[in-house]
Length: 57
Image 1 (cartoon, rainbow, N blue to C red):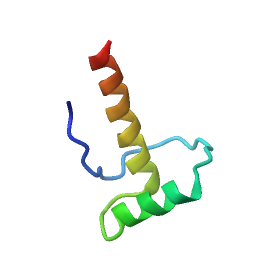
Image 2 (cartoon, rainbow, N blue to C red):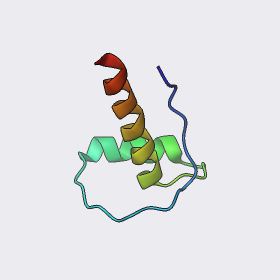
Image 3 (cartoon, rainbow, N blue to C red):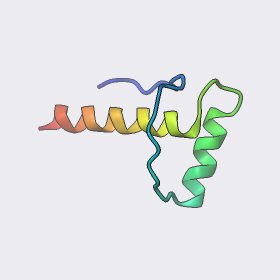
Image 4 (cartoon, one colour):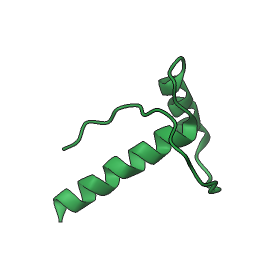
């Protein structure tokens, strides 16, 4: 399984999505002081989740 790492900011396209407030707070705490945006963190998390799904099939 691929280990999650906080990514740097890649080029992105805007996509609107709602998150529970506690998830937002936890992500913001995780990236505080890092060269990472909320969006870049979420994109990397989704990529890892998709890889994990593929590995499980």
